[in-house]
Structures are given as structure tokens and as C-alpha cells.
Length: 446
Image (tube, rainbow, N blue to C red; front, top):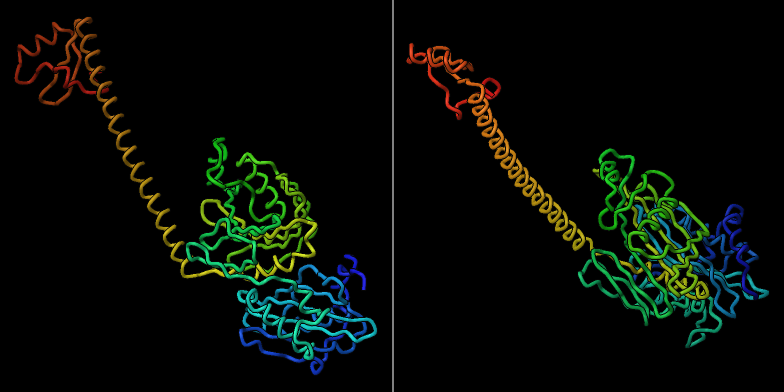
């Protein structure tokens, strides 16, 4: 059977509208001892591979109460089979996140046979291969080794994954041979494969909303935004926001802007902390000598926080475009194996909050000290100016033949000609007296 053309699979969701559901008694279920389930058997009422695939996806929809989100279709070389990975939020199981793979095989002249395996999304990366092995054994009981061709064994073609912990204990991820973690911590991870494949999970980009009054003053100053901060309005088109943020980040890093050609965009369910989420597929050239990369990106917008700040998170898997059909199953399996240690991340978050609070307290103390020093400086300057003004006025009085006299009965001050002042003080010294320069009253004597 020749390789399926891409436009054939693009019509798959349209076929879902018209295919009948899989007959319940045509499929058998096996509970995997290590977790997960295997569902397999002839797909009743279907005479084509596309119809069988649609029927299995409809069965998954009915089973979990939600339409599954499927990945790229792929075909094992030399086989009459096709498969795809799927994820689904199981409404029938209190919103549990499920990951799995669905497979259809239809050798010439036979009825289509289908199967799907699934497990908790956090565990599927480690239980997928054992389930595929079990499925192959039940489909080919007379073979002591994997049958050839086998739709299940060959369609997956995912090497064993070694669950690798992050250095800070905040999580782990399953990696095949030849892959290594380049950076991990606080639940995030970057890893690369031997053929320039890469995954980047948990990327976080803080953004200032230029429409918010609290951020406008900072933006008007013309100073560069701190750290990884960029500026873009919240609440708009998330794809455009993502592209603008990526451009600003590369400008801040003085790096070449990658060429990004988005080939598909699909809205995704959001969590309580998110306002929007979209799954993108894109061809990306980072101009780093690696050539054109096929990428899948889950971009999510987090709810705005105080101070006019919001953020987007990005989970990205990339591989050379020439290897896309061959290695997407591996990238998907790696993604499904990403696990987080909530207790460690919560402790790290509290530590970070404490650090930020301490930075705020230190900044306030520094500001208070600066203000106190400024006040003291201003008071010193004003006192010096006041003293100079008193002295200047005294010298002016000398030049004008004037003297300041105080009336002790009223406490009032008056600047008088020396002759008249002298007469008052001599004739009634108990009531009148000369005022010395340090005792001048501001606004009256000077």
C-alpha cells in the first residue's frame, strides 16, 4: 500500500461526522498490569482504513466524553497500517488527562483491524511500549517474536525511554538513547537529541501591558525592559502576541530573528490560571545552520497579575523537517513522559516569593535611607541658605543705617533707623531691645 497523501488525513475529521460507532462487542479490552488499557479487534461495519480510523476516534470520544486531540498520522514502512497519538481530557473521569495511540491495519482484501492504547498522560511515556508488546502478542499468538509487518510494533517505532530526574528534584522526563538534558529546574526542561531534535517545556515569558497606567511610565522612560520582559497588550490574538514576544526576545539577546511559518493553529482547553491556549505547528528556520525544523508549540496565556503584567508559557518540540514523519512519535512520547513534582515546585515558589519580598523590603529600606539622607541634605542646605540670608540682611541693615528692634510686650519685630531704634532702647530698655542676627524672624526681618 502506498504512503497516504497529506490531504487524505486532512479530511479525517469530516469523516468523523458520518461514520458509525464501533460495535461494542467487536472490540476487546485488556488491563495492562503496569497501568493503562489496550482496546483492539476488528472494526465492525467499516470497509476502508479511513472509515475504521474515524470509528475508533468516535469510540474514544464516546468513552471519555470529549473529542480527542490527535497528532500527525504516520505509517510504518512497508505495512498496511497507519497510526496517530492522541490526548483527551476525560470528562467521564473528572477531567483526567489521558494520552494514547490509535492504530488501524488493513491488509489488502481484509476487514480493517483497529486498536488503541491509553493511560494517564503523566505515565503513558513509560507504559506505551509494554502495552504495544502485549498488543502484538495477542494479535500474533503463533509468533515468538514481533510479527512482520505488525501495525502496532512498527507504527510506534519509539525507542525505550529512560525517566531522567531534574537536578533540583522538581520533575523528570523520559529520554531515549542519545538524548540529554541541557538545562532543567523549577519544573522546566530543555533537552536535545542526536539529530538536532529538541524539546523546551515550561518556557515562561513575562510581558508588560502597555495599556496599563502602571507600566506606561516605565515604557515612556525609554530604558530597556529588565530581564526577559517584553511589552504587548494582553487579551488579543495569542498567535500574534507570541510572534511579537519572540521577536522582542531575540532583539534583546542580539540574536537573529527566526523565520516562522505557522502551518496550523488549533484552540486548546485552558486551565483556571489561563485565559487562552493554542496548539501550533510551524516550520522554523533559526538561521543557526541546522536548517528547516518542524515544530509543535503549545502556547498559553496566563491571567494578568498586578502591576500590568501578564505572561505566556510555551512547550515546544522540534526536529529536522526531513525526519518529521519518522520521529514525531518519539517527540510525542517524550512530551507525554514529562512529570512534575508539585511539592518541590511549591516549595521553590514560596522561596522565590520570599526572595522577592526580601528584595522589596531591602529596596524600601534603601529608599527610606535615601529619602532620610535627602531630607537631611535638604535641611542642611536650607539652614545654610537661611543663615546666609540672615547675614546678608544684617549687612544690608548696616549699609542702610538700620537696626531690628523687638517689643517685649508684644513680641513684635520692626526694622528702624538706627537713631530712632537707639532712642527707644535707651529710654525704655525693659520693653525694647536690639535683635541679634541669629534671632531674625524669616518673612519679617529678612
